[in-house]
Length: 53
Image (cartoon, rainbow, N blue to C red; front, side, top):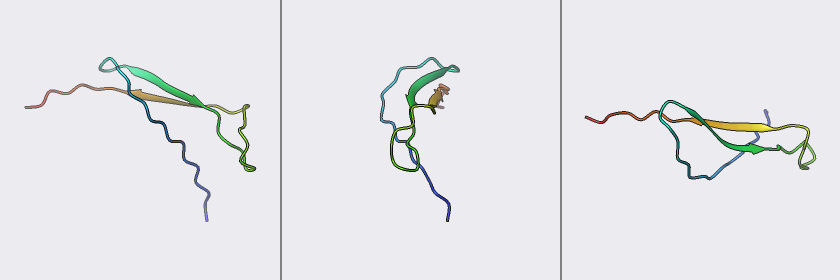
């Protein structure tokens, strides 16, 4: 059975259409449940504004 690791971020942002925005940088936990400061997960989002017809 595979192990799954979930990182959940709750944020409100303002972004420019077509550009990436950095949301957060998170240090994941190791197998013992301790924060591993040697590893980083960078979370980006890209906003695309679309016209609704």
